[in-house]
View 1 (cartoon, helix red, strand yellow):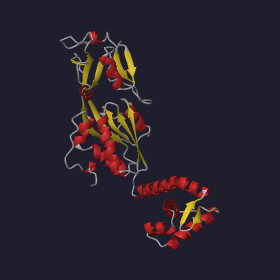
View 2: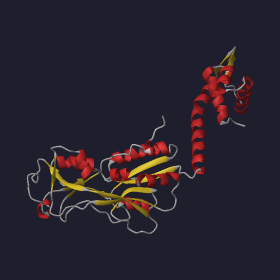
View 3: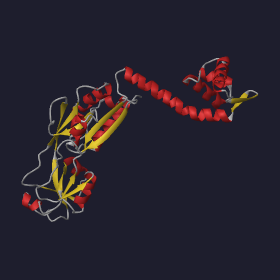
View 4: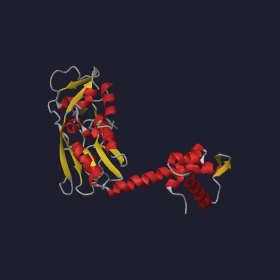
Length: 315
């Protein structure tokens, strides 16, 4: 019989202290039990792991390899033990979440930190999606939940949607742009003359959409709002960005303007399928249903209640 995780820990303790008696003392065992464990593991592998030198013992070359390699094995034992416990308690080994690209990163960072405290053994995967890509990955069973799915569910069949609130947008141009000095609400005929910065919809199976693009207007596609804001600041493009993004990038480089056809606020949802959620997924639904979290997800001030147990850290 090869070594158990307990046997491996015994070998590692003996190697650390170079003493059977010292290892026995720290493991709260009698020395004869430690010696027996070492002997049985050596017999199982057919090699000597230690050489005896008086009261002390040293690792052989085989023993050094055993110690080095067995650390990874112990990690696997620990992972196996945690995952078995998770499954036994109805939890998920892995949870996949898609997040709308307009949701503030700070809200997702807070969520990840809170989730890790609550479910340290569940593998969390978070991915960004754009517009209808949020619905696409949910209906395609590629994620368990979506945070900030926009507007309304394409079809109510097989999906549960929890309203999160409204996320507002601001139309902005660079401080040096030709439109920056205009005092009146800007008509489409005037806006159409300048390129609009856009982020491509990540949907594959649903019709792709644009946050804002006029008929006949040139589009410049970029990967994210960081790139979009950089182009707007340099007067290379114009467009709508979430209000929280404008506030985060506050300064003389961005100028908020009114348009004759203002973009409506985007209604955001937490969406998931009714089946397949374990304890971690249900915790997420409860988490994102809390008032201060919904406010943060929709771009509001990330105020947290003083007695927020989800972020409580043991003393």
